Each structure stands twice: as structure tokens, then as C-alpha cells.
Image (cartoon, rainbow, N blue to C red; front, side):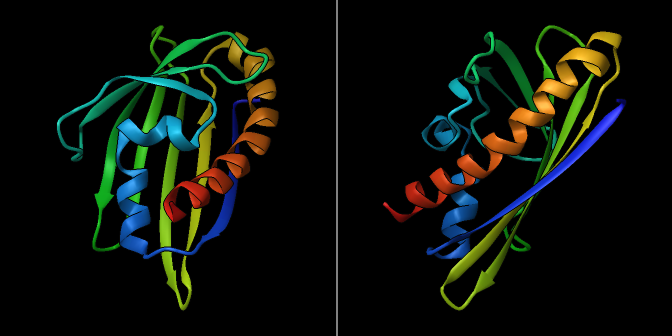
Length: 151
């Protein structure tokens, strides 16, 4: 496997701008993403090219550092995208794209991901395992995002 993709959507009963501000605040990631243990480093403000680092610790997995780099941040269009890579220097990458679509009762939040596996170990071992995990983790994170946004 050289690449895999996924997508998940949830409805949030809050204004789209409130949700956008929540997903674009790296300091709040551990509140709604259970795979993120803590934020290690973040910029003063997000802009294209800005980076943040988190300590990942999904259930039944070892810890690792993950560095994210903003590729798109469009508050007016309610779009946000970034690329993550492992802090150990492995060239494999995940591209995350978020869109928020207003509805009459809040907004629909959709996240898509494309994981590009560049090394033998990621293609044959880590990638297939992570694909299964993300299929569970991301919908759980979106449900938690909806709960946090409602507070």
C-alpha cells in the first residue's frame, strides 16, 4: 500500500466560525482528539507555512512526535488544510483537509485525509494498521469536537 484515504463528517450545533476557531487552535487539539497526548510547540498565530508539534499516543500504540504544517487557512471560506509528518524524519505524510458547511442548525464538519506511505515499513506494517485506526479515531474525534464546541 502506497497511499490510503479517508473521510468523515459530523454535524455541530454551533456557528461555523466557532467551530473553525476551535479546529484551528492547536492548543485545544487534546480536548477533542484522544490520539493527541499534548501540544509540544505551536506558533503564536496560524498562517500558511506555520507549524505546530504534538505528542501522539493513540490507544495501543507507542508515542511519537508529529509535526504539522499549514497549507491552507481560510476563515472566510471555512477551509483549513495541513500536512503532518512524523518528527523522526520519515518521509511519509498525511494531508488533512477540513471544510465547514453552514446549515440551518449549525454546520457540517468534514475532514478528509490522504496518507502517503514512502518507506517499506510504513507501506507494509504501519500504514495498514494506521488506516484501520484512523477509520475509528477520526469519527470519535469529530464526535468529541461537537461536544467541546457545544460547551
